[in-house]
Amino acid sequence: MIEASGVPHPEVDLILVDGQPVDFAFVLEQNERVDVYSVRSEPSLFPKDRLQVDRFERFVADGHLGKLAANLRLLGFDVAYDQNAQDRQLLEVMAREDRALLTRDRRLLMHGIVRTGYFPRSQNGIEQTIEVARRFDLSALVAPFTRCLRCNALLEQVDKTEVIEKLEPLTRIYYEAFRRCPGCGQIFWRGSHFDKLAARVEEIRAKLATAA
Image 1 (cartoon, rainbow, N blue to C red):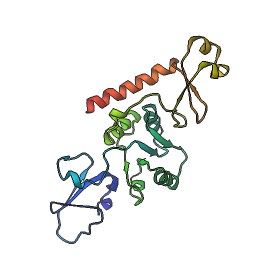
Image 2: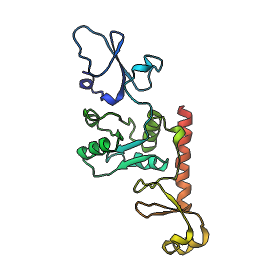
Image 3: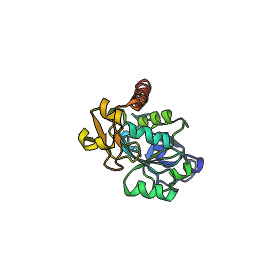
Image 4: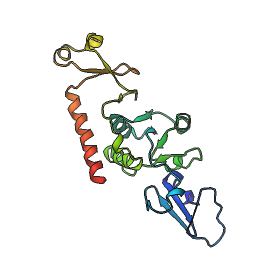
């Protein structure tokens, strides 16, 4: 009945029927009052009967959320993302790898297999990132520049001598600290691109602090 009203079940954290908590399996009869609460609403109300987890650190994002996926990876979070993935593939990855589903497709969130997920309200990548960080309590877990933006693998520190043959001449001269992605082999250093990414991280952190 709740989903028939357009609300996906992962968005529902507490259901009261005539003032008493129930779960999704409860069968309605007649003339009952139903109150539905979203995640983090009225936290003192029946805290032991909540239906959703407060914190989740692994995600799969649908193909329309590329900026959100990149931002979460930039902050250090594990996000599976394939721009061309079909709905069935998203659900398979979600279930197999125990990930929360991020999508702006309400119907996809309504699949019974979905246990944890979120529908970003904004269409702006930064604002979506704020939403997800608040929903899944990620603020204290932010670890920028630890994950590859391209393939999601955790970066490893590497000695300059190991990658020097792959560096441009000026990069060899001016930079000494490097990280390498064990997944795709991309090499990272604090070049001109770093300042732009660092500014994005600070913008997100500032907005999270304000939102808190």
